[in-house]
Image: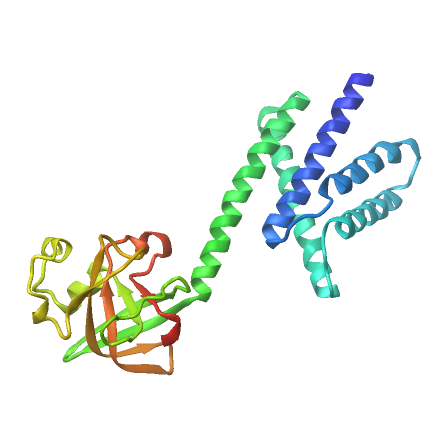
Length: 266
């Protein structure tokens, strides 16, 4: 019986730690003193069964313990922030509790060590999902409608504002917006991918076309840059004679966009 109690306490500590860490990961906030907070919650779960508390008192106790754990592990400067932390804390608690309950309904009773294994699985899956969602939100917040106009050709795409794009043309000193070959081909459909990638075409046939050396962005040691007549970004920004750079770095796989905007043009 003593061994079972010790295992139950260990699992309780384990779950409390996961709940606190996952809450911090969701809020993108460092969880302070999470182990102390987890121990506190575990000790209360050990002591509370010793008292014959009515149901409503047990609920109030659990709410109070949650509030204290949150106060130990998280910073907040407003009631709104505190309410958000509480909501996320409750959500993560339900994720673990609901997951274990669902597993029990599927396979029936299972040993306590299975709770540890399954909770670990839930923790890492939840982290992956949260990470993907955070990344999607960032991309959405920094995505703009982009319209490229060159002569009679007009190309509409979505562009991502990349703070890491600090490229400037060495000749015109203008900022450079990076594009993929898909966008480039819409502007110059007579140039094949192989010709563009191997630089086996006459760059003088492109408006102000020339190569500049680069250190990190794009493939190889240089990229083709050229001018388009006009570019519109968002709803009310428009620029004339903008420099574009053809990149084969594969940035579209990371951002899901075919254009990397320069901060100077947003």
